[in-house]
Length: 145
Image 1 (cartoon, rainbow, N blue to C red):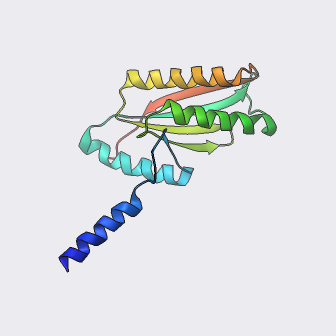
Image 2: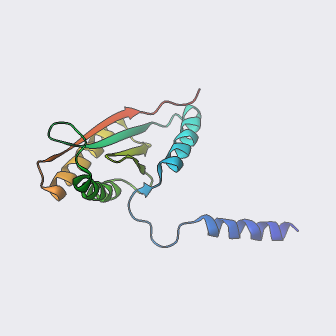
Image 3: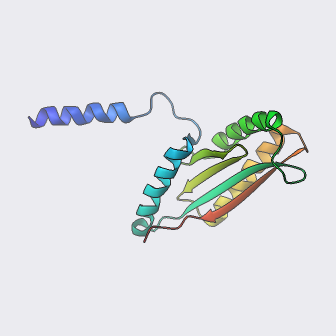
């Protein structure tokens, strides 16, 4: 009996693992991101781990949400920039039509600033459009007490 249970666990682990080589940050829909956020917040008070959250927003030069045709292509570009600017253990999701939310577990304050600069620099290099502006806000995640 015990041997079959161990075999079942090995099969489950194989089923849960990601297929192939893992590249870039972990992208999830917002609902999954929210659940992972809650799970991480629960463990933070026990582990003492620092986690930062970034909110990246695209606007036009006036600070308004760009027209949909322009925004869609820019958001796809930003998604790729974010994915390959972060570590494999970082998580992000699209929050709104013009925003991505990012979770940086185990990142110091200074390093989270470096991540913001990297994303902004890479986005500007990819887009070459002064019509769109990328804004990134960052805050430490609050642990569940």
